[in-house]
Image 1 (cartoon, rainbow, N blue to C red):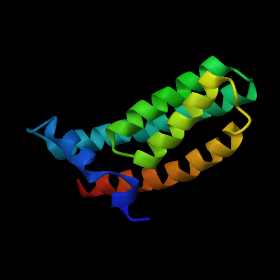
Image 2 (cartoon, rainbow, N blue to C red):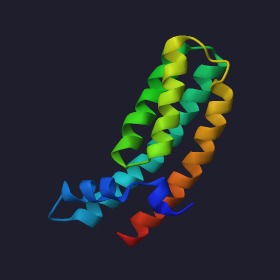
Image 3 (tube, rainbow, N blue to C red):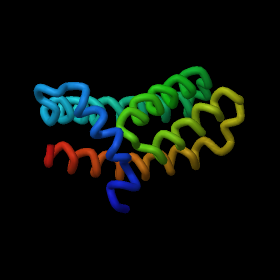
Amino acid sequence: MPETQTIDMQAINGLRELSPDAPDEFLRELIEIYLQDTPLRMAELDEALLKNDLPGLTRAAHTIKGSSSNFGATLFTQLAHEIEMQGKGGNVSETPASCIKLKTEYALVAATLAKIAKGA
């Protein structure tokens, strides 16, 4: 999948603009933090699902959604939003399948962001 479909480059450019003095260094730092934090939130999501902890599931999905939207990870953000809504609605019968989709999309997002960081 081309990176323009995985990551919205306008969002990436917007992040660069937040630090005009060192845009590439700033972007690399943000990507590094995101790539370290997101797997932790996804583990929280898995654990919450396993324990049927709907508030924990909802919170983890919401956090993933928010941080991912900053990078323009549109599909990944949408998948996290679906999981968040499943948790809020109390109907988690589809959540295991949604989590699989989320992990698959994260692999693409992570690879794309690592490539962007390398070229930044």
